[in-house]
Amino acid sequence: MNSPEEKIISENQGETPELTDDGTMSLTAHLEELRSRLIKSLLAIAVGSCISYFFLDDIMHYLTLNVGKLYYMKPGEAFFTYIKIDVAAGFLIALPVIFYHAWRFFLPALTRAERMVLGIIVPASVVLFFVGLAFSFFLVLPVALKFFIGFGDENLQAMFSFGNYFDFVVMFLLPFGFIFELPLIIIVLGKIGILTSEWLKKYQRIVIFLSFVIGAIITPTPDIFTQSMIALPMILLYEIGYLVLKYILRK
Image (cartoon, rainbow, N blue to C red; front, side, top):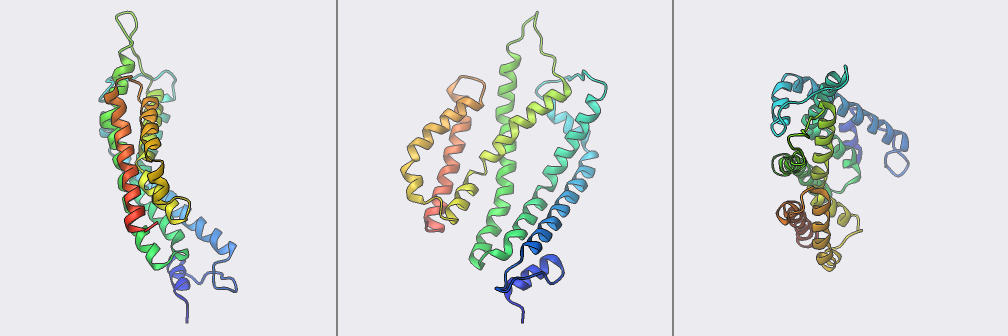
């Protein structure tokens, strides 16, 4: 009779995996499983890109809300930038599928309790990532662009290149998506024994100070209000990770 681990792996791959003598997956089986998950994730991105292609005009409308007209300086710049936008949007659409396959890859190595925790964490991580992107795009990015455009005058006017503007937006948004993953990172590190709730409480004041330092670095404007828009969510996310680690995981 197959062990629970064998059943889970068989469901994942659709065939009996190569197991070692102690009943765990061999290196070859792990690599095969990883390859399968990567291919499915890439296919999900391709499907997402096909879907986003039909909404490129709407996507461009929202991307250019804060700058208006854009320009392209090279013959192929507009074409290749549209492709990058389409693939980036496809990646965001496929993100739940990508997280799902990452979860399924690690599933056989987890206990029942860990599966239940991860089953909550994975959807939450997707939501947190999108919340971080939305927070940055609708609240922080307009302030940053207004600050940079403010350096212009009647003799010096801003003229944004299509490709450079998109690269700027992507590099500006992604850090916020990952910052909002802070509770997930804390929980994972706590689960594997690297962090404890006592350690988090001990360095709480330092984290609060560093949050405002990071807020000052990320935001281009010197006012405390804009910096607080970054620092306060980071502190709140840190506290959420601390509470989960202390009262749910008992670490």
